[in-house]
Image (cartoon, rainbow, N blue to C red; front, side, top):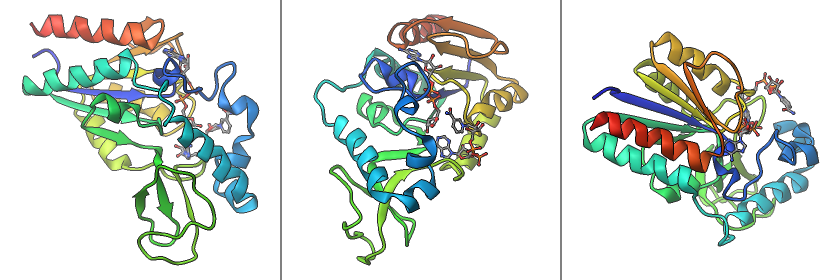
Length: 238
Ligand code: NAD
Ligand code: APR
């Protein structure tokens, strides 16, 4: 087997063709909203209703039948199944908060920026599955206190989930693939360097190059380039 541990980092670009807006592209979410209003703990304290409604809209979008995993999500799940069946290791780290990787069938996945379909108890720190609208009047399912539940999203200035697991995976990666992320937000933006230090081959799959130090880059819509690249790996694996 050419690569024993394949680590993939995904960002908003992989879900763009499923109808979910990215953050920083033209028509991205941050064109219509100030990050400090909707994606910081301070913004939530200042105007919780605005923050609830921003994420309620995005959570509701996931129920739209037109929003479904695209060929890139599906290709990653298929690759994981065949690579692990051959005895390889596969880790998917996603910055996305949608559920499209899970719906596509990905298994060993780290949603480092949280998940739209869960709510976080601000008292216990526990996450609970949450599919409908969330508001300040919703009671927590674990401690039933008036303490508010908040969207289970890692905001700016907060520490992403499972960072230890991310770094442990990167330390043993021999292939690192970055898909559909601008690489502007740390610590995820630093994962390329960590993988390089571990000696991994590094590949970017994106609509356009984001930097010059990947070993290889393939550019175009994720629904095409991800499947093509993973198929070429399968061919090499025989
Ligand atoms: P910071 O320096 O305190 O670090 C941000 C931390 O929060 C990082 O650990 C990051 O991983 C994490 N984080 C929390 N919520 C996140 C989320 N929803 N998405 C991504 N990462 C999240 O915070 P900062 O200085 O406010 O911002 C970090 C970086 O983001 C900076 O480099 C900044 O330039 C950039 N930024 C970009 C925009 C924009 O694109 N319009 C706006 C604000 C900040
Ligand atoms: N196929 C492949 N790549 C695409 C496509 C597509 N169809 N459409 C857009 N892209 C690429 C863009 O070229 C860009 O490089 O996806 C990237 C999207 O970048 P961002 O909008 O910055 O999204 P992301 O990198 O995921 O943002 C990181 O910022 O605010 C936070 O929490 C948020 O997790 C998010 C983090």
